[in-house]
Length: 147
Image (cartoon, rainbow, N blue to C red):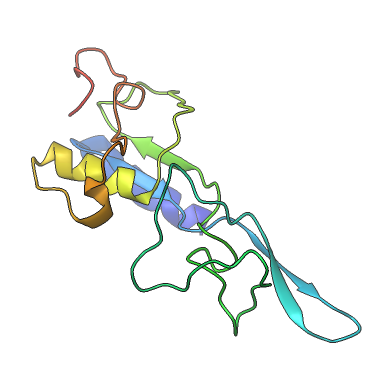
């Protein structure tokens, strides 16, 4: 998978005029087998970030329930979110080596794209107080904080 991504990115980057984002939707989940009951449960990071609300078509998270493949517990399979995941952003608007500690969620990314194209915010991307990518991400000199 990594080799495939690298080859594709190298094809795109020389002509990149916008933003290339490589990210994952969920963090790691571990399957834990109970040797007595032979039931597999899921454990891992399923925290939500930045007041991220659950989508309208997902199960409600219940802290007292153990998630399994047959019984999804919340939007993050075993919790209220998808856990902490990283992202690599490549753009002429981002200084190489830029790292930000500002927490962003799925809707922050959507809002950022909508802002670039001056589109109306869809659904939860329009929630009050949600941070879009700012000067901490768009860090290249002369970009004024946004492409």
